[in-house]
Length: 380
Image (cartoon, rainbow, N blue to C red; front, side, top):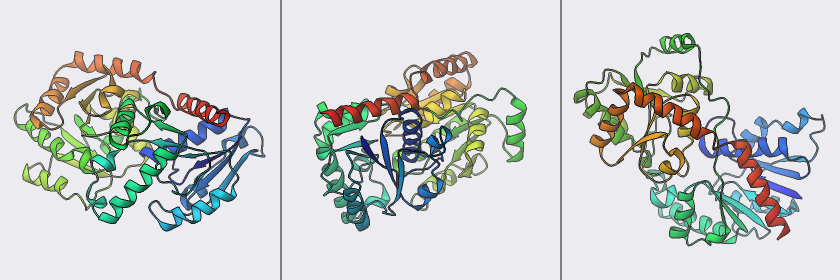
């Protein structure tokens, strides 16, 4: 079988869909020695990609990488990428995100990670042309694909409810946590790192982007309640690139007089992210909406107790390994975080449950289940 994979979002950095694409390709090429793969990259991924099959033999047999350079929502995506795909003579194409040429008609599979742009379009997607393009493209691939991979039951429900997708052709395949995320047994390594960046324990950790569905404003408001009502003396650490589209994040810090208590780290290297997880007292996942929620698994792997929103996919993914709160209620969020901070027995129980929960997810399993989808579609 000659398989195509849209790898335009490919990156080894720990970002959502980019990480999914990386892990899918890496695990498929390591385990599947029978099928041929054609990988379609933009420039950054094309340069970064290293074929894992070359570890077995120097030929890297059966893997072709193609430079597309077609940005999402661009004319080149709809025309140049389409032309390249048609000339590739594929048996099956896997679009790893909904952005696909609408006139591509050969058999395809698509992964839908979430419907965030349908429910929480954000400030960058408010233009009518962007909104129209999004709706046309996602509806086209959802109804045209032979099979849809949803990363959670919640995403499947949204696909059926919002886009009227055929439930029978949706397969749920969960994601995993990279083995880079792990518990660091030598506490001196964590202490030295925190001293280097000028951070003391205890601290509460959030990792991610500054989109409106991530609920950072309510997280900061709940932190103010923790400081004043529950007398928490530590800091709130927020990673991720500052986004000028969302000035309300830093404005809320100012409004709550928390300038010395909230630490914005900006983007951090992957190895530092692991250390930040390990040093945290609690990881808070406040999102209104998540298609899957990779940071939950990363927190489990690093032995950090988790406090999460009772929303979208998070109860499905976290199970009994989190304390849940109402994401719309900062007082409830603060109360639930405080219940973990003040109870070591509860923290230990959450950590143990997190390790157990983590065993139910793996990137290897994701790749194997995806390969089965390829085979089923090709033989149908």
